[in-house]
Length: 286
Image (cartoon, rainbow, N blue to C red; front, side, top):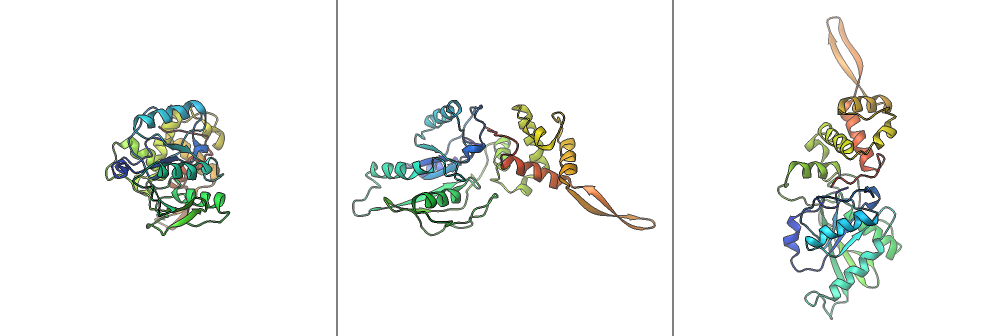
C-alpha cells in the first residue's frame, strides 16, 4: 500500500556505502492502476517498505522515483506466495561480491541485516527464503501487527550456496514523522499500534482515501447500495451486518437494565482488518 512513505528516511544515513537491496513486499495488495505521486527518502540493507505495485506502468513509476532517491536495487515480492523472493539472494550476493570493502576472500558466508518499519514482512521474508532455498519451516514469528519481533535475533540461515545468514530485527520508525498524512498511511498499514491513533480516526481517513481514489470495494464487501460520505453510517452498517454488538448496563430508577448496543470501535477495527487483508480491493495509498 505504501511503497514510498513506508520507508524509514533515518535508515538512509545509516546505510552509507553499504551494499543494500530494497524489498517492496505485499505486492498483491497494491493497486495495479495507480502510480504513486510522492516519495520520501530511505533505504535498508535488505530493507522492506510498504506494499508495492504489480503491473508495469505503476512499477516503473515506483522504480523511477526510487532511482531519483539513489536506490537502484529493488525487488517487488509477495512473501505469502513466495513471488519474486528467489531474486533476493542472487542480487544480494552480487552486490556484496562487487563491493571490495565488504567482499572478504577469507570468508565465504554472507551476513545480512533485515531492517525496515514495523509490519512490512521482514520476518515473513526470512521464512519465505528458508522455504525456497532450504525447504525448511518457520524460523521466526510473524503477525499482522507491529512489535511481534521484539529484539535482534540470532543469525538465521536462508541459503546454502551461497552460504547466507539473515538477522531479523524489530521494526523501526523514524523519531519524528514528516507529516500527519504519512503517519496515517503507516497506521493504516499496521506500522503503528491502532490504539495510539484511534480506530475511529483511522477508519475515517481510510474511507476518505478510498472515496478519493474511487475505490468502492467496500460497497460490495458490506452490501451497500451506494458510497458513504461519512464514516458513521458505514460503521453502523458494518456493526449490524457483522454482528459487532456489546452488552451495556443502563442504570434506571427501577433497577439495572442490560441493553445491546452497536460496537463502533469493533466495527472500525473490522473495516481496517478487511483493508489490510485486501478484502476491499487492491489499494496504493501513496
